[in-house]
Image (cartoon, rainbow, N blue to C red; front, side, top):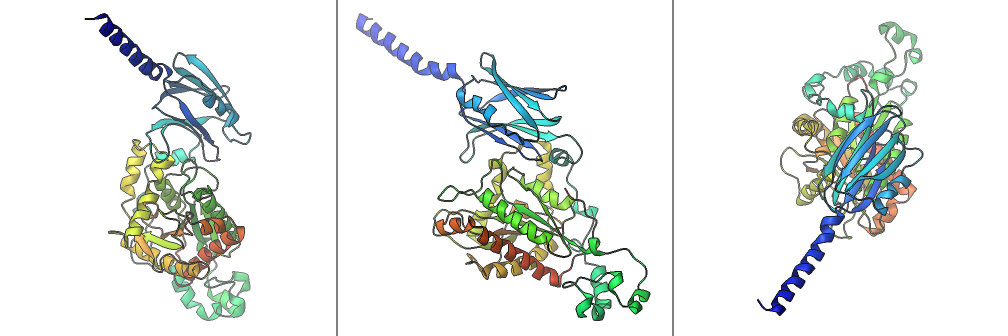
Length: 452
């Protein structure tokens, strides 16, 4: 071998080693650090260019969570985690970060209360790269984690008219006393009976003594603002996120329902945190909600798409190609928002979500129709017919459920309207009026309520 050839091979080998050495030596690089504090749980996310693994343990007094992240060296991006902890975080008091060993970074989370930690990894999806997630849940049987650990209830636990022919005791009572209820002083709204003290003396003697029925006959509406936390939903041209706009509409709708006689309200989320799709359904089921409304403001592939739509579940295929694509986008929320899809609880939930009934879909369509008409009175309709597709969040076996696309946030004009309080109030009012139109003809059975 000639001298020149040996020199060439030596130089080539050196260049190859120099090119590969930094990748081996530096390990993973943190590209983003995010913290999502909420009363239900706090999430900490480390996003990196390579997959990370971690081990963790709890220290009880004072309460601390210690996490050792492997394959990582301390860098300025990771140090930013310290400054991202808010004073009002319900769970984290402070964070300390240090290089514990070569290629091992230790995070010590000083806690305000004992927690149930869940630590898991997520592969790249959508705009996210590899993610290492720490979810800190409160202790206690009513926490979101405790709810997830329980096997979701089957619809047979408390049968309603959605699983068998309705024995509408409330409807029968209203028919029996229709003449008195139709009098101006006999009702404070459609289908609302007056109290014992308001009835004429003859009617008070005819009815057996009974307790006030108003709480039993009140309608519980579960509002579901789509997306949240790690899942921003669609993003408008100016950077406005769907999750933020629909949460504001949800708050408007909640306030209106709270002021409406004989209606109660719950929310699957009331701040910026992620809730898995099946957990949204389960929250409505466990609260014995009468109605479920999911609120969205989706994006499309072109900015020309505009208008509102209302969707229900489909037993078979989607009612249109667009409805199928919408459902696919919304059903990707669990992967984007971040859920441990290998967990047993998630696998069980997927099976339970296939129990929706024909009666539930029929009732959902009857609720969606008036809502679509009310929406059409204030905004342009993207579709003048209620659309159907396999939306996971609508798969409640017993609760009439609809999904309202309030606008296309990908349309610059509609994105701008969504940012105005007046428009959000109009949308919330239209949804409520549509629901009330439905309730005028289909008063629900009284059921025991459990708010979650």
